Length: 67
Image (cartoon, rainbow, N blue to C red; front, side, top):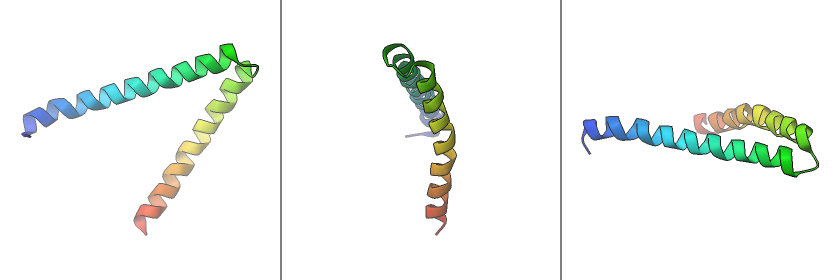
């Protein structure tokens, strides 16, 4: 592939991937809030898990790749 095609394709694929991730995560939060007994507390707990686990996973992946 030439550079022009990649310069169009890479941002488009990244935009679609981020949009799909956001929609799926929003759907999960919505379902958790409206259709489970956990309600708002469940959304807060899931948000905290994502907030804490993302840097922890990144740390371990970085540590593993630098070895």
